[in-house]
Amino acid sequence: APRLFISKALKMELDLTNSHLPDLKTVELSPTLTLLDLTANRLTEIEAKVLDLKDLRVINFRQNLISDISCWQNSRSKESLEDVEFRDNNLTEIPSFSGFKKLRRLELSYNEIKKSDPISSLDSEETLEELYLAANKIGEIAGVSHLTKLTVLEFGSNRLRKIENIESLTNLQELWLGRNRIVKIENLSPLKNLVRLSIQSNRLEDMSGLGELEQLEELYLSHNGIRSLSPDLLKLKRLQILDVSSNRLTRVEHLEELKDLKDLWLNDNEVSAINSQLTDALKPLSNQLTAIYFENNPIASLPGYKEVISGLFPKLRSLDSTMLRKGDFGVKE
Image (cartoon, rainbow, N blue to C red; front, top):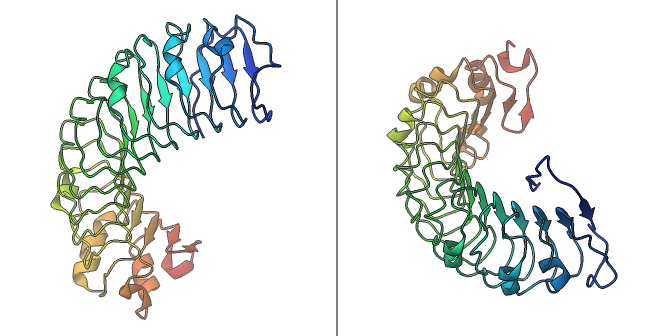
């Protein structure tokens, strides 16, 4: 669900969500409005009466039919707007955001945008914390390098081939790059504050390039072509969730330093044997792991599989699609 930044100083709000409005001709807008929510209507343009509002802090155009927002440059709320959303419209271009100096959140996902370069016009480099550009047609990460206060950057479901032009974003805590065409993990070393990283559903064949991200708590790399777990994992000692499902892994390794790991997703790989190498790799996780997934590996069809795996983890709550209870397969807690 979208997060709206709403200041305590808000004076007036107008929520017209799902009002089936084709336009705002019959709507009276108070000049003192600070929040205007127009989600889920049938608007095709931004009308002058909206541009004339000068105290807006939050505006939401989510789920409308707007294709051109070039007039947004004429908004009289440039000096006050903190949260702007145009998610799920028909935009093909990002307009100039020159003069918008207080934005904290900008949401432009689920449109038809092909280039992110115009984001470079945004004057909110001292305030912008969250930028969402998911589900567009963007082929290159561009225009964001000056936004050094960003904590969340979303470029999922685009046409990216490289991780680039984000080395200056050293305050990032969340980076979402799933469902692109990325072939290599690169240029992430400066992002030492990352807590959540998703590069799932790309074209990766290995997972090297993560060793400097020592603050990571959640790592999502499912649905790639990764053939082995990287020794970089040994440095990611804060990981709590590791998802490497739907890859080409044949063995489990390099997990011994992950003392905080709670969820381990290994389903839909090619692990085939229950042997000392496997149990030795998993034993260091015995005191904290609560969920592990091996289904759709050859190992999952072997006799005694559930008893062996669950016997390694006394705190296990979920094994594949089975929710465990005390006493199941040797579960003790």
